[in-house]
Length: 106
Image 1 (tube, rainbow, N blue to C red):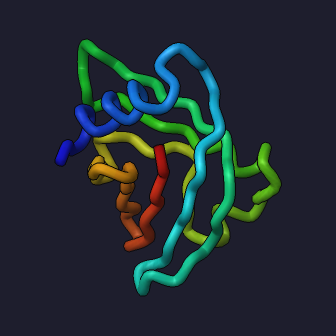
Image 2 (tube, rainbow, N blue to C red):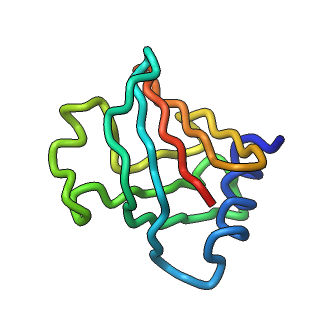
Image 3 (cartoon, rainbow, N blue to C red):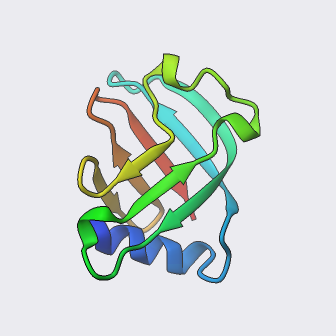
C-alpha cells in the first residue's frame, strides 16, 4: 500500500506516464458510501519532485459532462498536502475533507 506523493507517483506510472492528459474510470462517493458520480473523466497529474507536498491531480469534471461537481462536494484539484491519497492493488483513493471519496481505477 502506498500513500500521499508515492501513491500518486505510482498511479501515474501505471496509467500514463508519458501523457499529459488521459481518461480514467472514476467513482466518487459521499461520506455514507453512496455514489455521487461514476464514469470516465480526464485527469492530469502534476508531480513535484523537489517538494512532494505540491504534487496534485486535476480531474476535468466539466470537460466530460459533469459541470455541477462542486455542488456535489467535489473539487477539480486534489493535492497530497490537503487530501489523503492511498494506492491499493486496484485503485487510487482520494479522501476529500468533507468525507467524500474519489476512486480512480488503473
